[in-house]
Amino acid sequence: HAGTNTPAAINGQRIRLIGRVSMDMLAADLTNAPDAKEGDSVELWGRTVGVDEVAACAGTISYELMTGITGRVPRQYR
Image 1 (cartoon, one colour):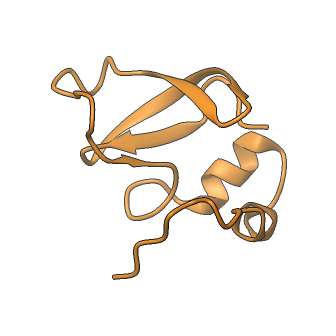
Image 2 (cartoon, one colour):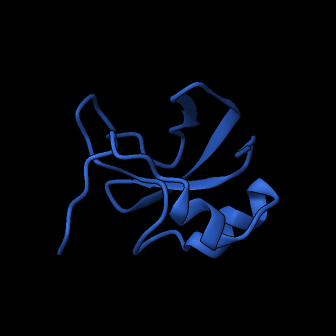
């Protein structure tokens, strides 16, 4: 449900999503991250972008986003 202007981050730089999520792929505007390259870490929510901010852009609540993460998404616990 995340559409254009939903925030994300790459290498600690805030970016915005463009278009809509298609299956498990999305597109991002990298204007604010000119050094971004293939293989860089992308944050959909976390330290740089709050889950509540993403939920508001997606028209839902953070609880729904957090519980909707499927088992095929790798987890990193720190």
